[in-house]
Length: 231
Ligand SMILES: [Zn+2]
Image (cartoon, rainbow, N blue to C red; front, side):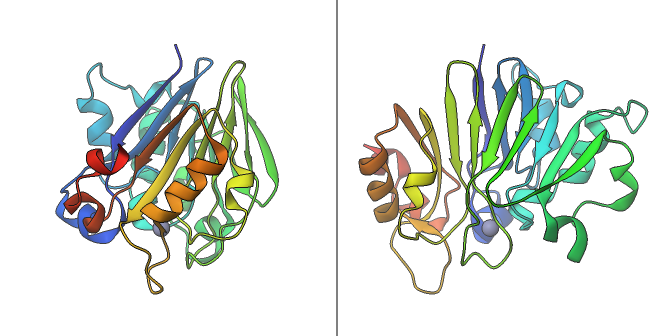
């Protein structure tokens, strides 16, 4: 069975720091391929306390959409857990180059534990287990190199729009049947480089996915009761 499991719905610094919402990222199972996307703080704890328990050794790969801590904090421990402490060389890790080279969030010694570390690039397409995925466009104005992801299964596709400021035509890159949207802000802000609820409405009304899931909430979204906003 294919499934998206949210190991938390916290977004940005304050909600993550206070753990008002959890911040473990997204566990995607598609055509029997298991992928962990954006393992923020607490990802390992959330996997192990999930019911049913999610075993990191079942992961085929880990993807970082970008290097910010709320997306990458647990990447090293998750690599250890995926590879049985480095004893079973397996799995693939995907991340933008600035998460690997410039000021790496992926420690060098754990890179030997995995089969491969692959660099995400604009217009990249990648294979993992039984599925493929693409990173169609570089998200501008988020401070670090950031990508959204389209996952392609046999019968269903899932689009994940990670952190970004809204830019013209962003929705045209993410046409998945299921759309996962990181909506940090209730209202637009010139200073904060994130999508707002208004941006989300625009994207959803243009793309009309079969299902949209709003996640990665900052404080203004949580105070406004996301379940009511979603209606
Ligand atoms: Zn970010």
